[in-house]
Image (cartoon, rainbow over all chains, first blue to last red; front, side):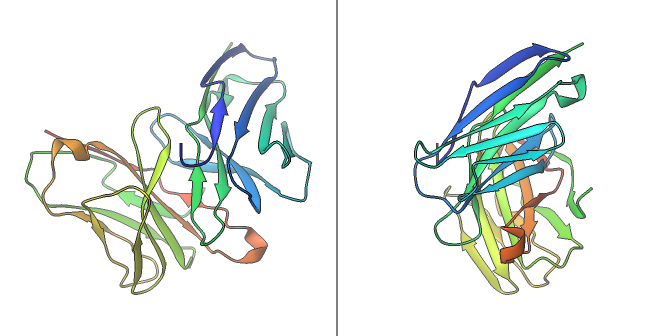
Length: 111
Length: 115
């Protein structure tokens, strides 16, 4: 992987349960972002956390960042069938504006 | 919904054909990107542009070329398509301003199949 590695690769849960996915990266970052991709579609930005932040919330999403371990986690609480998608973490590059994406976690939420 | 468009959404063509994948955005973003993504895999940056008349190759070697004559338009061209080019191509843009921390907006993608 260029930079991020998500785990698990795939996750299957029932509606109402919480889903946690993790991302590890290799080099220093300024910020880390999470994106969602519905099957066959483009990516949608979910949340961004800066390197000087440890935790951030947005609705049912909670993101944590541990720069000492070069890792981040995304928690989706009270999951819904509509949350079924692939989730990618993305880190900025030391120079330039492009992002490095991981391989993603495929989440399946069953009713 | 992001105002970034890609056409066509699906394309099936024969080997050796020349194709152009279109990408347009109406957000006035300076920065635009092309990513290639195989099913279930990560995104690979193949081209990017930081403004008009500025284009650079990304991490993944690609036989495609791009142009940026207008801010809103960033087409990708394959002069002679081959089966190895079969993939999904995603276009994205960002304003790159410090306040936005470079959140990227993605188009719906073009799924290309070369027979």
